[in-house]
Length: 332
Ligand code: CP
Ligand code: NVA
Image (cartoon, rainbow, N blue to C red; front, side):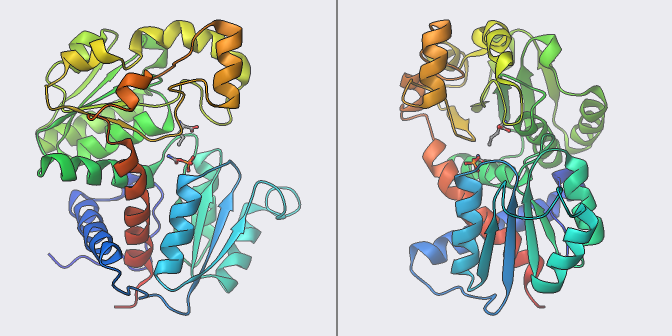
């Protein structure tokens, strides 16, 4: 099938078909190969992109910056302070102004409605670099990492443990449904994903021959898993006062050696990162002092084990984000 994504926004994977997602993954593989072989791939020379970040980032920002530079583009970074957006200028006006200067706009921030509003008012592609609801570029890196470890991903099983309402968990449920990957999330009921999204995903999964399971029992969820995935217990933008409650609710869902042993023997561990797997961070240290817990969503032994593919996954952010920019910006 001839797939063209020229001019398309990349806001959430619900907007993309299975074929389009697989096309982006294929393109990412080609670009990864080119990068490894030091082959020039500056296909977008003369274009410029702007990165709007209302929340902090290491991977997403760097992947967009290096990706854009590898493709031959110029890049402007606008951080949480320093631009007029939201304070003196509306999203709609900002989108129109930036569209006059740039060929593509990346946005990381709070409500999904903001990135949707930007896209509605922009005449160039808008890419979602994380909102409270979704993190679609992360998904491409996650699936690419699965493909590198298992080949065909259809029919495999990915299990998320932790705050299953968050952007990463919800996006995983969507991408798994779209690609026919069995998805389970293990969490206390109050942290189950939004019911409307679950029913949309169940319908898609059924069409693709996979299943979606929501369970409070980690042992049940993890059975036959090929991938165990977790994320921080409190996400960016959430109040720090939530830590106490989240630790209480989510401690039984920590990915540790015992939980790993309930999965398939060749199962891999993934995490979008950043991760609290030790106390070598400011927040990790504060939590340790306050609540006496030194490892949170994943234990350090799992994080550094041979089953852990988190650094491959982090690298894959670059190749997949580059694929999104190339596919949506390249002239036919
Ligand atoms: N996984 C991810 O999005 O990381 P950053 O917050 O560092 O971009
Ligand atoms: N759920 C996390 C993901 C970080 C990449 C957050 O939103 O902070």
